[in-house]
Length: 100
Image (cartoon, rainbow, N blue to C red; front, side, top):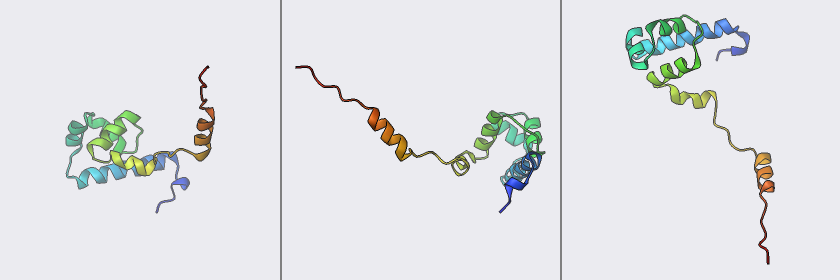
């Protein structure tokens, strides 16, 4: 397992790009094929694979086209409601009494 905290941002981008490239190659896709599938320019894919920064929307399009978007759950698990927040929300509910 890689020690991500010991890497610089540039090194992380480079590693990320390498992994995207390997995934693309394992799926027998050229950069041009992936560009067409994702709706991105080939230069965007080249830049990402070479460790350059790309915008978040481009990254999502790329992950979707590589069928990796569902892996975001591993990166950022969905939040479950904290017990403290649930209690606070229940306390805020007021019961309206009927007037007689």
